[in-house]
Image (cartoon, rainbow, N blue to C red; front, side, top):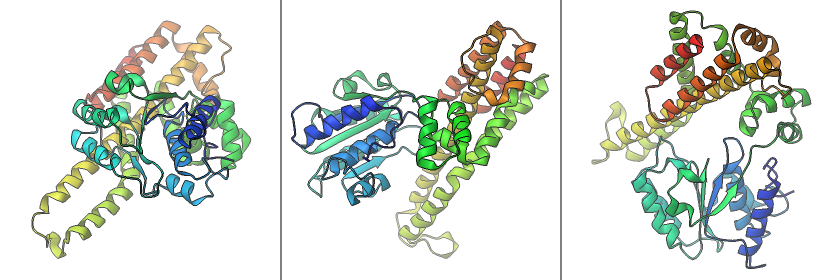
Length: 386
């Protein structure tokens, strides 16, 4: 066993990182650097790989060989290791102020004599000013500092940062590899694991949710029922509204527990008394800032939930196209073969391609901060038009 056991279908990446760990320990001179880019499609395991690498760098045995049973590896994976700072953006972007705080933390000397690791998830959310602030630290890293940046593609960062980082490319694991992982690690029934892995299109986290969460399966069914519900303009608008409201409700369910805990802790920290009055002067704006960050987190969560539904929908029309063209390529949503056949019989391959384009265009518009409901309404109208 090793800290890399949770990486699915990434043998080349594991070899690259193990070589770097050996170099960091002085076993040879090739393979280690102070800045790394972990790239790959959603669900490929970017953050998992980065955390495993951080644990291996800190572990006295270079990954301990005992999975997560050693204390060092346990604290890294739990997010409590004092020399591993995991930064997960709460909002839609990472501003220059947050980037400067990241740089300050990276300059601290490691308390346990290893490495001071900064792991930045969703580094593609860096604003231009934030990227420039981070660049200076990457150009002149602290002697024991290591930056691990996770993002979908190297092109999502400025060339000045990309050129100073070692690239780690993760790929989408096969459905068979994901299913085997769910059976071995999570104890999922093989048939359910196979269905979940195929429906999740190689996204390990999504597959786990589909295999173990009834609500996740219900949300998938609702999203994939859309193609049969678009008979009129009013239907299109109602379906769009239902999709957006469902994403809002799911986002609220996900983010509310964290927000409630944060709010209670902040009120206690600033000495807020009965009636909501702050006992310590000069701290009244802190709660407003917290509320702003929580709202940004909820907005991001809603977009992530909706994007999962749109990804399922795009794959649905991909399956329809396969049926229309007589392809023997395996279907993503094979469990819905009757539904796919009905849609395939009603249209042409050309119309199906236009519908795939409409779904993908909706994803791009939402990512570009277009009003969510308007983007989804435009999509459903395009799907109905064919």
